[in-house]
Image (tube, rainbow, N blue to C red):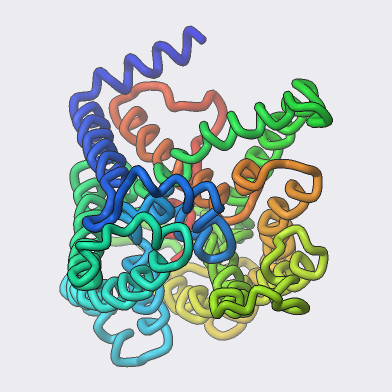
Length: 449
């Protein structure tokens, strides 16, 4: 406890770090206030019926609502959050991998990065307009339809599209400002805050349900909390897990100085794909449930399976898709040939392996071996909420036992703590941990290329 208090004092004593923390908290407060401002044309007093009906809590809509911190189900001006920006960023990332012309732009350095960022912003506007139009249709479903003000109906479509587009761009701007002047990755911080904002209510609901007759009482609730902590610890190991490939650099004598000759390591991540396989799998798995939005309430079979996350068939298909997408996305973002060329250019080599194509094959083989267990563990993380629901955990609380929410939350917290630790170590203070340094996703990823 004494070390914790001293660490907090050290953090607050660094003026630059203190300023970054204050700026980050200020922007987060602005975002959370905006998440409770209801769209024009909707009576906030009549939204309780729609929310009580579980609006925006299933499938991809649940993912939207989790990322938006509940703003989606509250019909807020920030209802779409940063999801359009994420969709546009994913699309642009894939294009830079698949399209040669985009690869050339990306390799132009800082100017190329600015061009791609600008194109991403333009694409975000288009995606937001499309999603805002779909959201207007969603607001006309039973529950939300009763909350709409009749006299405002003629202007509702146009005003909602404009407000939601402006809201998404403002949230995107907040994320960029946090990135520039605050602490951590701005967009990731906003998503994490949205997810964390639902945790207190979920814990309270779970506690109340366990106190009811047949709920199991306080003991079962404490066991669930213990399991949640164990899952988080395992997830930290998965995120930070790397395979170190030894690399030697040839000695070079320039003038009177000797360079190279040191033995280093090439870190290969066990979970190189991050959270993307789970997001892709959830998006694909949600498509069959679209039938339920076409007034086919009696739909059975595949629609019933895909709409129930605790269904064994759903979990099997979902796990297989996560494993498949993990290998696919890792193959897209991981380029062993480029790594081999970079090593050769810097006079580096792996002991016992010839430079060039043999080195690329060797790195690729190692990556394939460590990707399989990483993919299996990621699939287990993805289906854990379904198991939690089968064990009578409330739906809101079960989402924190795994899946996208927990993976993003743990990863972003690790990244932020790593940045804080870097500031402490630069000023000769002790780090946040006694042994070893905190490794976030960004540090390992940047070291891998």
